[in-house]
Length: 593
Image (cartoon, rainbow, N blue to C red; front, side, top):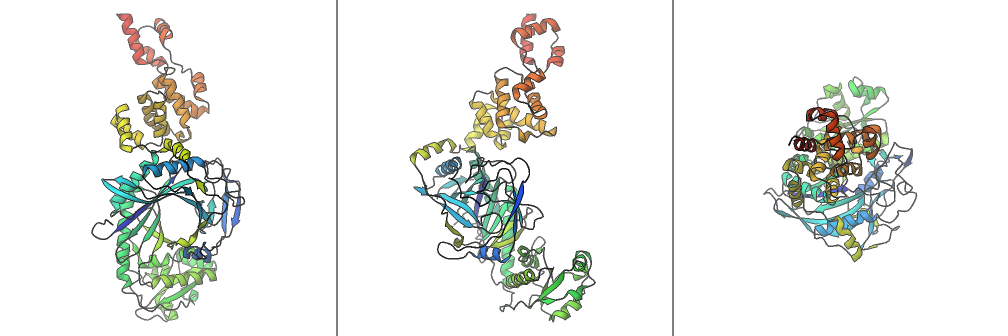
């Protein structure tokens, strides 16, 4: 495997949402309106086909959460886990096959859907359906060949609702098809990882079926260094953040390797002690919690004085790392012995006396009302605090280069066959049908756009979510410049006016462009037509009729010149949306001649 000399190895998992219907039912992906009602579920771990239990699933079950799900108009009994799945969405499967062929991957003769146990609440059923569509293949990025491990087609998870403490989810996105592409761990720097992610994202966009918008594409990073462990960082939204995440994770693991050498060999037994009476003079949030009936429970951490406060990178300390293991049980964090306890209003001597703390010892304090969860959380805190190796785990991207522990690294024990669906035979007819979705080479597309328009418009179109609508319009005979200006500058102008241009269907925009290209309306009228469509909630042709925006041309223009006079400025100031300036000048010029 290639590396940068430090032995850093990075693999990417790209998850791209597709703009088709749901994967295992015939509901639309888009949802209009808010939730209709809610349901609740408790999820349990199950054994794999080999009778094994996945450690991540077992730990999730320990948390004992009850999940609430908001049900939307685009949900059905499949997503509520009250009905078996329907056949896999054919268009989504064809797109996955097309991308597989573009990558030169090996496609099996039969594709099977598997269940992947996930009981963190992100699925009502306790598992995610996923199918391996192809193995192997490669992609070029920056002159380097990036090997591909797998390409999967899977269903999107439910979206966590803010403020729900991981127990409330919205089902409106559950079941949307995702293409997941996993690379080989052959990437050796954060900059290279960003470039590879960009290349894969652009390739998927070239299918014409990649959904656009916030959250429709996500990057997961798998990072390891010598002496460390493979750590998966999930949910990276911004490509430009990847280099910083890699830098911080490498630094975090290097610091943990050093800390592991300082950790005592003997792991102490977690013996909780109630220290609520010791902190009765607490202030701020701590005082409010105690006044509300919460208890302060502490556990001694022998030999860890000074270790808990060790900085890993940019403000993240070892104590923060350890406290993250309490979060899944509902605790926002913990207080530890290396902190400034005065800011909480805690008298250090009183607490340390109650715990029997020696000079080299530290301790952790949790504040809460659920005694059972506090016991479980403190046990996890002690377990994490005394790890003598960097743990292989899954972490969540926090959006600022920082990450947080989510769960242990999942194992193969969470996979088992989907018994409600038959295997899918990959036929020659299917592969032929998939050809229409085979991605175009991005560099070729950009050059074509430059030839049709100019460099500035070409680059804007290339980045636009309306790229394929533009290509469709031009293929249908639209004037490239009219189409390019409409999809970039015109929509930008309307958006700045506060209009919801995202709600404009591509077909509506293309219709206005085609009418302009055919000479039915002027170039300047296109903007007003689309504005009226948005404001008056009418169709394109009705907007033209209501606004009197039909183009004045030919004999009608001759008659207008005869009645208004030969002053082009006067005519254009009065009829600027109905008269084409170039045609007017030609008419007046011929008349003068």
